[in-house]
Length: 258
Image (tube, rainbow, N blue to C red):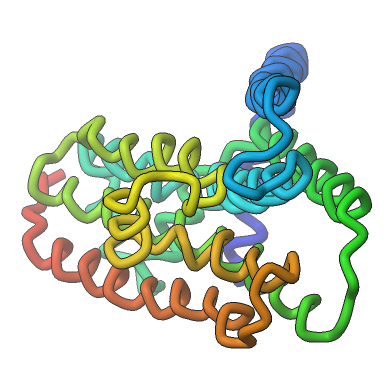
């Protein structure tokens, strides 16, 4: 991990070489994030609740999913941009080094401009928790931490699966955005507000429901089952086949001969 943190420092230093560009990009990302936030605020100016979920309950759901997505944009950008490693032939160099491949891919790129989204997600999370007046206990603290962790894990897993098909297609396909950006926009609302087909797909195929729906029900006191509180652990198990898929794809990789 020492190598990883050293690479993060190098990427941050390189981004700060162009400080005006960094600041302008940082500010633009702040504005983009708040458009998502104000859409939810505007929605609840017309409705008191959505299938029993109040504005701050939805904002809590929103903050959790944005936290995970933004964390991956900052710290796992190399996975998201994996197709560039294949196209440039840089993946060959990674294979020659005696270090874990996934760790090397993570070290290959980062995007600290997106750290503003991560900070904003934390701010919205704190505001929502304060407004909801949660009756805290140890289990609810654990559930909240598991939701935040599983949010990071699920997007990392999806990025890994998206990276694995680059071994077959060379270039990344935009269809991945259906499950990353599209999934993020859908999962920032409680999954239960959607139709049954969506709920089933995003529970058993891509388990967003175990990130911020079932555990959210327990956290908000809408369901007393402790199983719901521990349900984000299913997402951590989901990461295992994602890693396996990546390494299976890597076996199909043909060197560019550089």
